[in-house]
Image 1 (tube, rainbow, N blue to C red):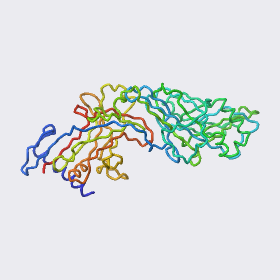
Image 2: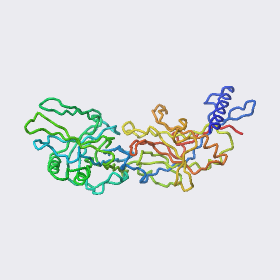
Image 3: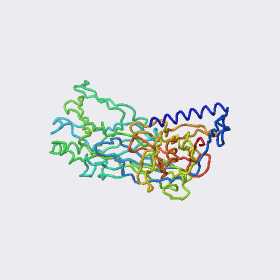
Length: 461
């Protein structure tokens, strides 16, 4: 593999030398042949515009949001994205007891109870309110060893046990919790950036009553009594932000005080424990009434003129380049797949931002039911950085525009040698998170300023 890379690198240097020797600028050679030098080598810059692009949205069973992994949770509602519609997320988790056979002190009372979910970021308008309510789950079989999918919604009871109204921008602050004995600080706990939900009197009374029974003997009896909490946005129809949280580090913090000493406070934490506590993230998209609804799963033989990409669970694109295997036999110097954002009419693109990275796979069979890595990507353990896919800002006619490029010269060269197949490609918005929200509206099939195209620079043989 290294020999092939070195060969192409040397060939690129040779091509650069030819450009320099002949004195041609880039504007001179685009779309036209170079004047052959003494060695009769012709370098051609050409563009293939006949890509067929299909926007596809399907339920994705590969997105696992429970079990012993995927602790991140996306909570909130986006209801006003005119292009991509609505996004909505709920979180579910179990908690453990502070210790076995736990009891509150006989001479103590609960002052406050707070549920803390570590906060790691947001998507959308970070200055808008995210309003959530907490409920008791009604899922007797909710267990840590179950691999729940993002489309599995958990059952819950109807009584609200806690509420929070919080702007994502205000979630970045830490909270200091202080135990006091006799009015003096005894110990200090720091709760970092978090979604902070105050539990209500109904929950506190439930907790006090249960603590006097066998429900508080151990974690098993505790979870039979409270087999999980559901954190649910109050509305699916109003909202402008999603909050990224985690159950790892989550805790229910109970503040008590001694009846005989109101100036003395003691905290008890009911933590999330990864090895024993179940969790789940339900997430749904609703494209009804949005622009994208008319351009998904169309099966239009000519393809979709606009490409819509959305991080999982969302929308991806299937790309076909008919007849690419019949490209003239030549030495491929460069082959760039170019994806350009459509800015016209996209007035919310600075709020609902674009993916930082796109990913390109090849279909490994004619039925497009299996995927493979494009050879230019390199090893999955050590990807080739020149493969591309990163978000780049360009100036297109005086307008700030986002563009992505993939470099696939080795794939095309092998295709011409009949060492590769042309079954098409899968283009998707990439995120390291199992659930994410960034989206892109870009050019698709057809010929336009922003259409998706393959630019090839090759040397005639």
